[in-house]
Amino acid sequence: MIHTTWQPQQLQLTAPPSVVAVAAASSNGSVITLRIVNNGTTPLTMRVVFEDGHRFDIVTERTLAAPSGDLSATNPWWQPDLITPSVTTHPWTLNSLLELPAASFTTATFHDGEMSIVSE
Image (tube, rainbow, N blue to C red; front, side, top):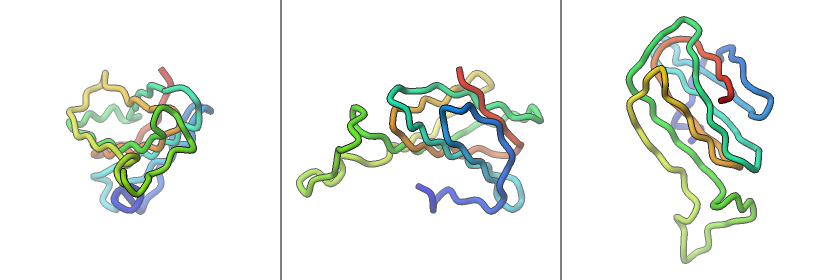
């Protein structure tokens, strides 16, 4: 998940204390990736706010989460895909939210702008 969404330019962002988050942009600024770790035991809902008011149409989210919050879960040899990232690409509007499962790592890839995130 990290190597497929890597971007060279780190961006400033404001994030709530309940998550660890970083944002980076492509060298020409046309792609922005937000990486969020929810270390908590409960799911979180996040809104992404672009400071310049920029709007975009599509986001691709990749999320790796412990099944049912079980941090000791593993992929046994007979179920090698038990714990794998989910990938969704969907429309994005000003009212869209990121759903972050408990004990998860999420990347969200957008286009253009600078961002901050706030808890719902």
